[in-house]
Amino acid sequence: MTASRTGFVRALTREDRGAWVDLWTQYLAFYDTAVPASVYDSTFDRLLGEDPRDFNAMVYEHDGAVVGLVHYLFHRHCWKVEDTCYLQDLFVAPDARGLGAGRALIQAVYQAGDAAGAPSVYWLTQDFNETARTLYDRVGALTPFIKYQRA
Image (tube, helix red, strand yellow):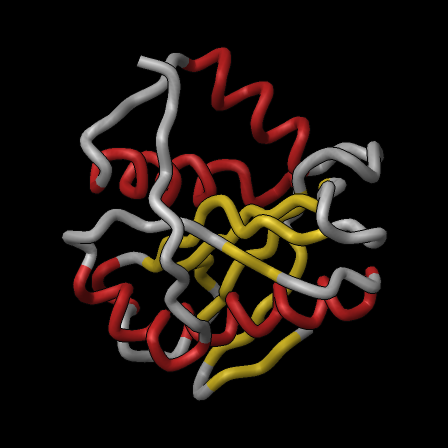
């Protein structure tokens, strides 16, 4: 558990399903996308699954409410012997921003990476996400890589 100003980071639990759905829906909407209910179901099950190559999740709790989430996974890397850690999704509810939740969630993933022996943690964001990039510039290093995907 990682503490921050007035809240703390903890593992996602089955009881968090409603709050997680709400936060992940807001996150997807920010990126102007949506997924079907079946993806919500499979993603939530994977986040709580036992497969070490599957996803992991933590939430930020403030005053008894889940107000932030982070999803991450470990995977092999051709340039390293150890697995690396990919922070896939990070979101804090707009009314909870400024509490230190985003930083606490990233630091918790760093701690999980360290505990797993992963030499690096990386993530992507869109160039227009200035608010998040202000935080990212303080807790990470911008790389020169540009993402491409199948057209």
